[in-house]
Length: 226
Image 1 (cartoon, rainbow, N blue to C red):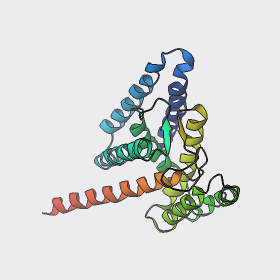
Image 2: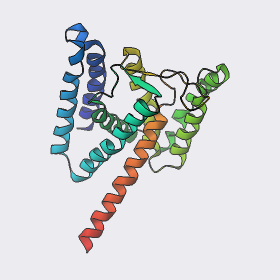
Image 3: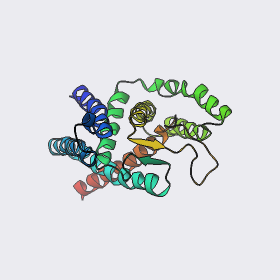
Image 4: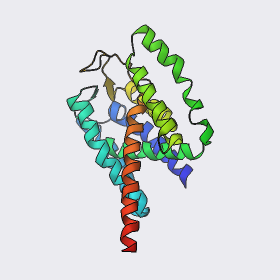
């Protein structure tokens, strides 16, 4: 089941981003380009929500509750990236859950001892970005990912998300679904498009989701014993 979901999420992200960016290869009017992806993503999200258990439903709602305002803040207030057609597409919050669950599936296939080592290839690339001056924010994001992975409750998930998020971001930026600012607003930092360690944002979101779900589960157990 889980590998079936992994393929579903991967194809949804890849094909969905292409359909949205190209308006189905030019077959749709640009103002309708996102709608097939919106309908598909929310249909998949609704099906999973209907057929899964209580814990995953809490996770799904929690991802939406955190991802949506964070997306709007980053793109509309901080302006660290800009979407192709301005405002955040409606499929994005559902897509955040797909990526979260995909990262979790990847993490479950990984040995705990590999969580930190698989992040090592990022180090020389970050060093180059800092030395070149083209991605000075990379050092901060790398440190965040390392801290999440070393001290967080789900190290394999954070390591997986660093790579999964980068892969998705490369596809999205190359297709033109969104573009990251080369100069990070409100700072003197620079960033690549996409930032190499963009997964740090996803790690932070995953940590919030995990903490929230744990609290909900604790309250549920307390209620059962009252």
